[in-house]
Structures are given as C-alpha cells and as structure tokens.
Image 1 (cartoon, rainbow, N blue to C red):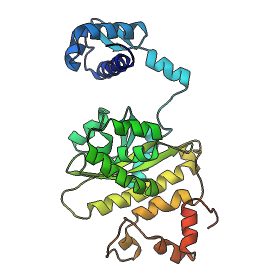
Image 2 (tube, rainbow, N blue to C red):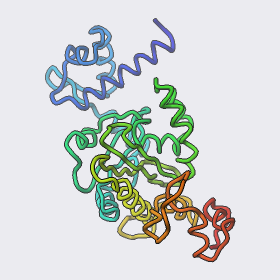
Image 3 (tube, helix red, strand yellow):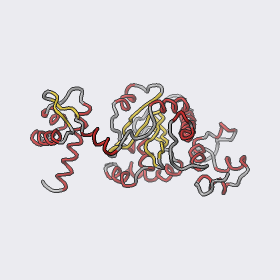
Length: 313
C-alpha cells in the first residue's frame, strides 16, 4: 500500500504509539509497543526509529519515553494550555457553583478532561479525569457542546468518525438548541447513573473548552434541578471572570447583555423565582416573557438584547 492512504495510516499509528509512550507506567520496548497496539513488529520498529530521529521519543534503557520535540514545537508556536484558566481559577469556579467542576477540551475528535476542582467524584469517574482518558464526544455533555460551538471543520471530521448513525442524528436534531442556549446536557449517555451539564469557556471570541458539572441519576428526583442551579451559578461566574482582578487579565470576546441573558434564563428553575413550573415546556428554564415583563421591557426588546442586536437595556 502506498500514497495518501498509507501515509494516513502511518500518522495514525504514530499517534497511537506516542500516546502509549506518554501514558505507560514503564518505558515500553519496541516489542511491548507492537504487542500493546496489535501492530506488526517491523513497522513498529520503523516508526519508532523515525520518531527517535525526529525527537518525538527517546530511549531510556531498552524502553521509550517522550522526547523534547512536542515541547519545542509548543514553544515555537507559542502554544500554552488550552485555556487561560488556571487550577486556582477552576477552584474559584467550583466554589461559585458550589459543586465540582471539570475542564474538558476536544482533541482529535475525542473529549479529554484536563483538570478538575472541588470534591472528587466516585473513583471510576474520577479516573477518567485524572488519567485524561479519551471519551466519545456524542456520549458526553462536553463533547456535544464543543462540537456545536467549536470549529466547523473539526466538528465535521469528528462526526464523520462516529460509527453510530442514530446517535449522530439525535445530536444533529439537538444541535440548534445547544447553539441557542449555549449549554449541553448528557443524561445517562456515557454512564446510566450519571447526568452532566456543560457550559462554554470562551476566550478571544472562541469556545476553547467546556466546564462540566456532573451528578447522579439515582435517588432524589430533584437532583437534576440541583445540577441546573449549580450550572446557573457557574455561567454567572464565567461571565464575571473578565472583570475580576483575581482572575488575571480580562478575556476578550463578546460583551453586553447578550453574553449574560440566555444561558442563565435557560437554567433558572421557575419555582425558584415564584413562577409555576407546571404545564408543557418545550425548553428548560424561564420563558422570555417571565424575564421581560418584570424588567419593564417588551419581549421583542428582550429578544434583541439576547441576540446581541441591541446593547441598551
């Protein structure tokens, strides 16, 4: 096999080798890499030889560890962490939400959790974050959010790699609502006992990560309400981060009423503000009338504010 297909296969294999080397408890030998990844020994040896020659990996005894090439490329490109949020910042968000918060990014079409603050989750869930394990995007609130709000081409490539037509169709039907409310939910998609809500972390006008809250689906029926309240507090804290000195430099991006109205409205529990929660509701949270009328403005004016077409309340 030659040409583009062979090249793409070699790149994919090299990526798998690098991840194995990065996560192995002990430096793996050529044989150990081939066996762990079920690859031909000869092509594994050839790839590792090339990766050593270009600095991606280096030898330690008979095993392999990451080389300095990834670090140097990051320096050359000026690439830092995926978001300016530090762990201290994430701790502040967790305190504001009064719940544990995880930070997730999309890498190669998979969700990776890169940090966590607040109380630890049960071990089987916490290990996903601690070990930065890849998670299928359509099975997670973070993945659904990042696909909807992220780079269009990257999202299309990620969806093309999902071999689950019903899941893709369900996500595409939900996507307009995710874009409108700027939040995504996962109710038992990745784990039947877990529900999650994800909200965007925005910098420079782009969604660079997802902040994720999780809760259990067992026991009390009001736990989804509790999770939504925590998400509303998290959205407010994220909206406030650019104006607080303790969060470092202000973050560029959209400003004005539109950045503060819609996500909180979608997360407010009607009963919390003295409004009946009964009746059929197509979407969660408050209707625009419930916000506009007490504020003394028309629903049309509220809509213009929410869409960013007007900046004068």
